[in-house]
Image: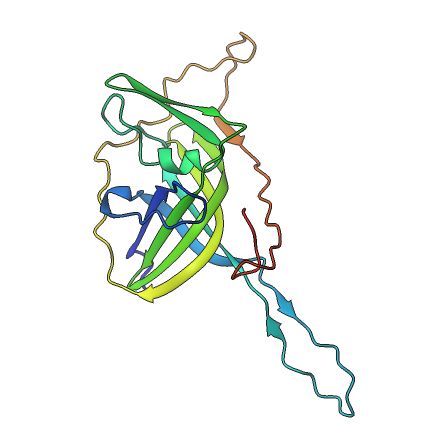
Length: 216
């Protein structure tokens, strides 16, 4: 697969773990995109028999994990959420939109949202539902601000599909310069700033779920 030919779309779910069907307008411009399996269960069969041969292990469900880094930037329009806004909402943030004015985010302690992620990798589509995650903000002088996301979700399906021609906001991110910084009123001189949410992602077992995992 060609790693430069990848697309990720993300849409907030109205109901947990129900496909929100992200489309062309739900694209996020990212870098360092990766997919992996998480919490995979393989059951070893320690049965007693007259030979030394090992019995076949049993696959008992898995979740998936998607990580990516996105630019820290707005949408270019007042009162219009940025591309990363949907991702932030599923990392424990509440979004407040003031039409034609601004969009801001604050930490939420209730009504936590989840999302559906579609990952297109050079002709292969992977879909994750019920995703929740964590994020880390990194700002380094002379660079652009970045947000690194890690999402964990259920895997309902995987198919061969052509790449989606997703739409992205045309605005470019501002450089990390000329940014006032204070600590308790003290104008500290720093070269970089990192803020990690450190969300604890819990994956409870559920024997009635198709993959053996309940709500993340």
